Length: 114
Length: 110
Picture 1 (cartoon, rainbow over the protein chains, first blue to last red):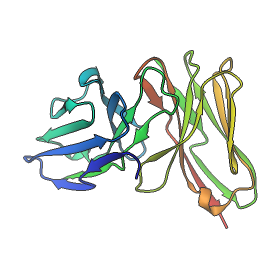
Picture 2: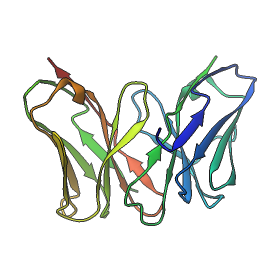
Picture 3: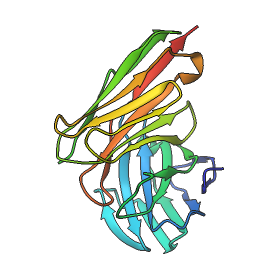
Picture 4: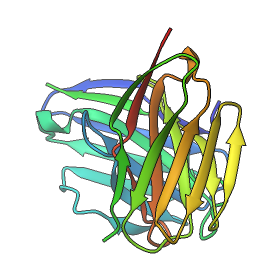
């Protein structure tokens, strides 16, 4: 139990589907993040939310749409994805601006786009 | 723009041997993090280094930070098979801006 829960663990979707990834943190942190991890690539920061406001959007295609309804929940809405979007999507949380403990990561969602 | 580089990218070592993983970062930062990732799993926080000269140890792993050289090291002492994993370092150029290295895939051979 890491304190950050992601669902689903695995997801297979067609390019025309719409799906959502969910992340929930039970740590009282004030910042939440979405990262993409592809094979043979560094972790890519996608979105950052601080107290439900988006503070970072790293040139992510519009087919990825984040939502943060409150400080404990973060969603990533997916639509019309491409096969190259297949990856491990990691959610993380931290306490900013002085994170003495760094990130706490969720277990990730393994996404396959077919 | 902050860049974080790790080397080596792959490391295969015998049990009982010592080795060091290096993490270089490109801009001024006084924070450095180390994580471990097992295959198919998420990232687990190992060390948080918050000042120049910081050294932290846990079991067979020891991490250090030299902010003047913009270098952190993760030293493995007397490796065991259970240490096989991918190790990531991460630095920050400001609030929320964490940049991860490419990772070092460590395989400890029995």
